[in-house]
Image (cartoon, rainbow, N blue to C red):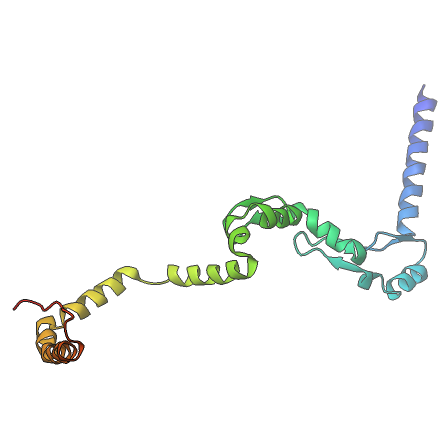
Length: 178
């Protein structure tokens, strides 16, 4: 039994050493994960433009073949977020596109271009100090002498009413009581 265990242990160690030796003698591309048996092949691969053929996903930073990038971005779970127009959540970019086309009340009502403008207007309006503005308008209106303005324009209105009455004959115009 001791010989069997010793033999089994020796076999395990031998296999482990060969796996480690194989891994140490191979070079793996960190972009496409291709494995090369020597440094020269690995360098040739890296110089062949492998890196240019793969692009970063803007959501999860995975390296994806350029031909597959749009499909990856559409379903990337890290592409989840909230609609900038209505705040609704979405699971990925594909779901966001479907939401904009079918469900977003603002975009489906006025269109994406107008919605972008409305969002900018709403952002601006959110930044206005409405209470401060109301106070300034109230102060400005309080400083206007409305009675004095009426007294200044009353003679001009009386002349206009007199001119219209004389030139239009029988038409009755309302005259304010004094």
